[in-house]
Amino acid sequence: MLKDIISGLLSLPLSILWIIAPMYAAYCDFQKGNFFLALFDYAFFPLGAIRSILFLLGVI
Image 1: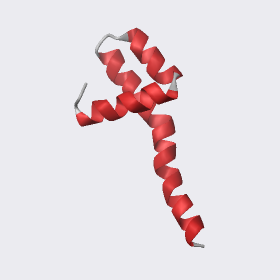
Image 2: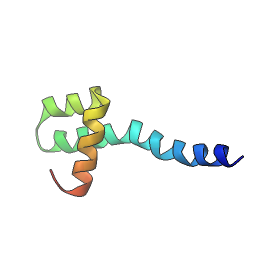
Image 3: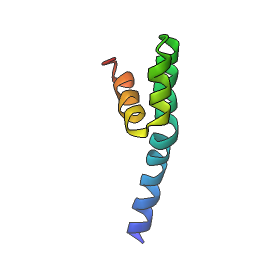
Image 4: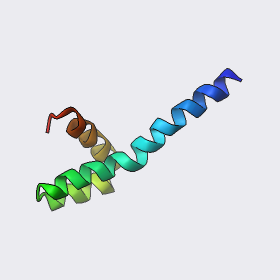
């Protein structure tokens, strides 16, 4: 039962990371005029997820 609760709690952040994070990174790049990077952020998940975290932390 605890395993089901933990997997349920982890599914929401992973879903957010999978869907929203690349879109956020693409939006930030699009606003800066980097259309090519915006396309890659949305098309390739690892790049978009990593760049969205960097945008949130203010590194980029």
